[in-house]
Amino acid sequence: MPISRLPSGVFHLPRHVARAIDWAMRRTPSAGDDVWNFQIKGLAHAVANGIPEFAVSTNPDAQPDKRSYGVSSLRFRVLAPDHQTEMTLNNVLHELRIALEKMVFQDENFRDSFLVRYSVLEPLKEQGLLTSSFEWIGGQWRKVSSVFRKMAY
Image 1 (cartoon, rainbow, N blue to C red):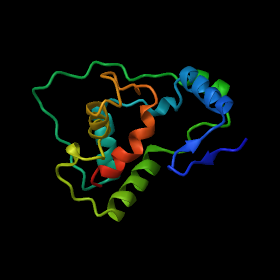
Image 2 (cartoon, helix red, strand yellow; image 1 turned 90 degrees about the vertical axis):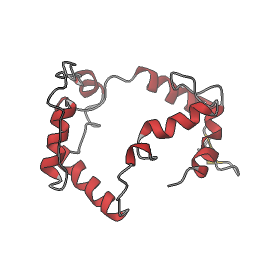
Image 3 (cartoon, rainbow, N blue to C red; image 1 turned 45 degrees about the horizontal axis):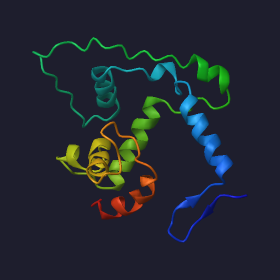
């Protein structure tokens, strides 16, 4: 049975396909590449190197970030050798720059915009579609398209 789009715009998957996707999503090892392990400061400096107009400023009085960002993707490399990361950070930065230029991005208050995941998730939580730990409530994910249509892009 093929994937079909219902008149409401929601995609319909055969139940066995949906269950298989759910099973895989719950068991996926860390997907990615070990070279994509960054601390925020290192990532910010890499962005500044790739996008010269981007300036990095840090709080000299802030405590150092002692968290470990080292996530091993060894299991994913073994399980899915033909599905490894093909992009480099420089490729991603180049595409990001092009996308921002195309959308004539000038929003100095972008942290409160739809471009920040939390700004997208918080209204879903407030409307009772997500739990406080950002998990879908029942079949509420179906209502998301109406929420996104109301958001100003």
